[in-house]
Length: 124
View (tube, rainbow, N blue to C red):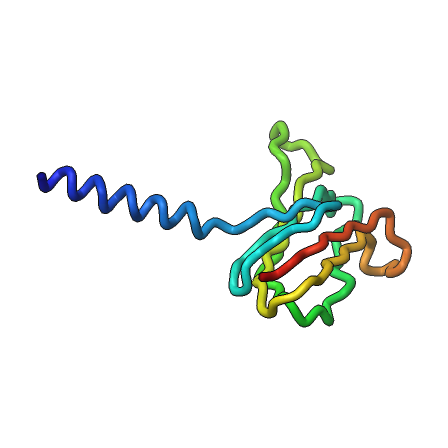
């Protein structure tokens, strides 16, 4: 009986961890998140070119930026110029509809971007 109780507790703990996972947003569709939840956007990037993603509408009142991380794709040792992904994590702070706009540009050349991504979000 003690083993069954231990397995049940472990199962519930695992389920709770899975339920609190961070949501990954999809570009080009309406995304829904709950107020207080964390969510992420993941965008292909290659900082060896000098380009990176810039969050354009930082005055957004519905979300706060939590973190930004770059992870290089797997590649053979000593290979240079390998791309990867930038992942931005946000927290939904206020209910309502909003958008996140990102431009892929070089910091010394603002306004000359090569790509723009828009994420539409409905915060409940």
